[in-house]
Image 1 (spheres, helix red, strand yellow):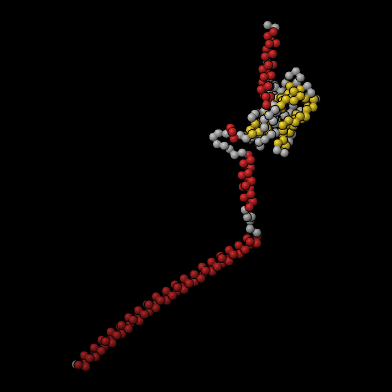
Image 2 (cartoon, helix red, strand yellow):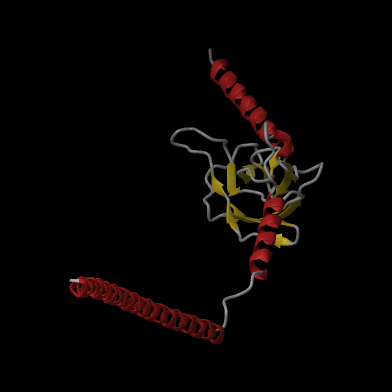
Length: 255
């Protein structure tokens, strides 16, 4: 019965060691004083455009996880392709209140946006022991970042480089478009428009005058027609009267 607590402790230690070994399987392990520090990605394989984190797991000389560091104790600078990030805080991810997380686990969230090898420069202190380690992804350390097209289904999404290239092309086309016309050109356009409006107004006035003239001519023609009809009627009456007088005169002479 007395051996039972010792047996449980040994089992728990073995399980913890197996868990740590699985997590650090694609990590590089370095010695910092009496501490062992595993450095790598939190999630591997590491895909471009997928949320990830730089992960640092620390154990002491007895193999016990170090859980009591703060976000101010450790920093990491990430570099790739000639560019480097600002210092990122490695924050503890094990929650002593809930027991969730990995003992001795410290992470700095990061999303790789370009494929290739990444370098992690970890600095700070572990209980007064200074750490200044630089490790780069390789076959013997941790994974390089790769494109995610191999796991995309059914459609393949464009890569970040392809999106950037397309945006650059759009920007170039926009930049090549002619700019706004100078103020003098706009003044000329406004002057031409005013002249055209004045000409249209004058043409409209002329058309109105012509229409009025035509109306007057039509009225005059109508009046002339009436006068002509009246004159013609009067002439017809006079001719009939003359004929009647002639016939009457002849009858009188015969009598």
